[in-house]
Length: 313
Ligand code: GLY
Image (cartoon, rainbow, N blue to C red; front, side, top):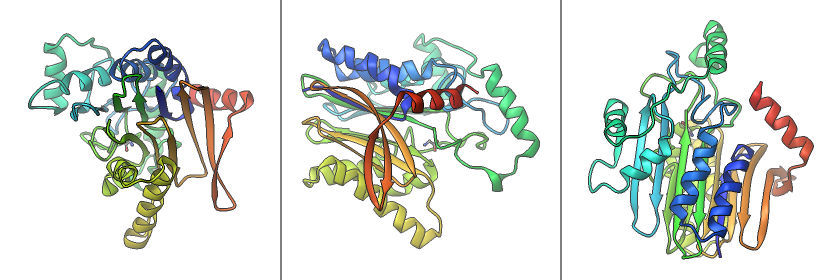
């Protein structure tokens, strides 16, 4: 059984590529890399890769993380500028014995030495949005860009190997050097092929407080179905933050176990995700809370059209 699950409808084309690779018995690593690269390369998405929105200084700083659930190897980059595909650098870093998580200049030097493609990641449209925002910006009104942030993916290949990965430009107007949850193993992503994997999206400052992706995998290991694990982990973290910090911001997570069973958790009104499995065609679902219960609704063509036009604007 192969399977793939990803955060946000923006991952649709990527998941399509990933699912073809998995159908053809390619590895989880290849599938996750191609899925995430596809989102990184698409200029209309404002929160990942090329076209991602800049930090407060107008610089696009990218974070990405990767984990191989067979080897328990991890690679990550934080605050990376000027490289086309952060996920590929994170995967390469996971093959090193030390220095698996590099930030800023060190990450860039590593990428250069290893021949990764360089690219100015600030698209003109992103800079226009930044210039506009700069006029009215204050930290008080900062909020995650429409919630459409990280692409987070979990893959299961026909050999039973699982991987988890993320890529994001992080919060729009973030401080220079700010790193969110996405490259943090256990926070933004976690996977163990003996159990399953998870990947998160939302406000990194909150997600990392609950080591959310690890918590989801831990609950699956204890016997929870992925849906129960994801929902419990998100709700418990969100409730705790409300109690202890008086505020809980956007948090969502996708997960899959090593049987290909999947689930999602979210504390927002509408969270879209993409799923494909050997026995199930690719679907974009919207998770909505209806009368207190989380329900999945298939996204209609009209919904997708509206979503894409919002991204492209
Ligand atoms: N979840 C992405 C970030 O907070 O940077």
